[in-house]
Length: 465
Image 1: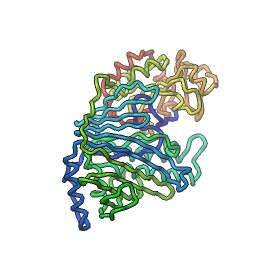
Image 2: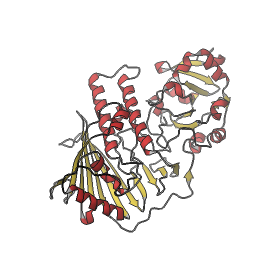
Image 3: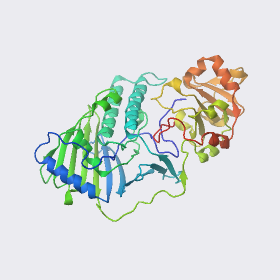
Image 4: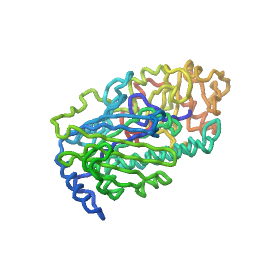
């Protein structure tokens, strides 16, 4: 299985494309220390903090331009819009909605065609741990992309562009992330990041997060009135650099950025602009604010909640796969069960057949191959659509088997094609035969019962292939 980090049905987590994060974390007014600030900036920041502390609501629009082109021929653009009211965040784009309630609990749902419209309930998230995991995952994912697949390593020029684009993406996340819950999301593999599919954005925390980069990662100064930037009033600006812990998690330096915060009536922000440029890649994020302190209430998710997003009943039932699994996999405290379009795993092929993915832990390039057991299962017809090579008798436990692209082993159990992992398992005939001999038929109800409790190590942003 070539584990991809493309979109996973039901849970809008790390989808293919470039991350653009928006902002939002727990940073109480007056919490951030201001040291060695230029005269004038301190007073403005104090006024802004006071205004934000009294705010009850506002709307915002996030507009992102990747690799801006003066002729506007090659730029890639994204837009998201959101609302904050009385401690509750809600964000929407063309595919997903995200809500974080006043207690920091995260809810997401798919709104694009094909989604069921139900909210997934994810609980609370450790933002600092999530940010470190994200940066490390990007680091490992880019390394995998540089190595390439069956075609070998990518050319040096392409590898350099991948490194540069990923570093810019990571820097955007760091600079638009405050203390506590970060407004971040992962993307797909670095090669897919260049394709420019729509990003997925997370929100949470208090409005004072918008000051984080200015006060903690840079040295703010006042800009003059009448700028041609997004705002036309008083503005604060700073060159920001990544903190040591972010650089350590990412594994190499991150490019600096330029943050500008524009203010309007009542010392409330009208726009924030972040510009990060690497050697060849560049991203500009502009967040525009409006409707401050308008009376509004964000309704919480109703009773239509999916409280087990690691095992989607509709997906498992509709996959058509007659699942098999060893009993000890279902009994594992890290058991997950998902069904995803097989196209996401195997590349070009039909869009209407699903693969069942069963595992005892998270999957993704940031996870060592030996740390997670998994089974990818397809109907025989679906598997043949991606690879028509025949099965030969005499495989593990005496079952028919074949090797597909990249040497991946597949075993035929009844009408179900089973691909066991990790890859090293295929090189251990005894362990492989033991696993295959232990496979037993299981129903969607069996899978859901086994996954009734939140699996060990689960996070809302976990990569599901």
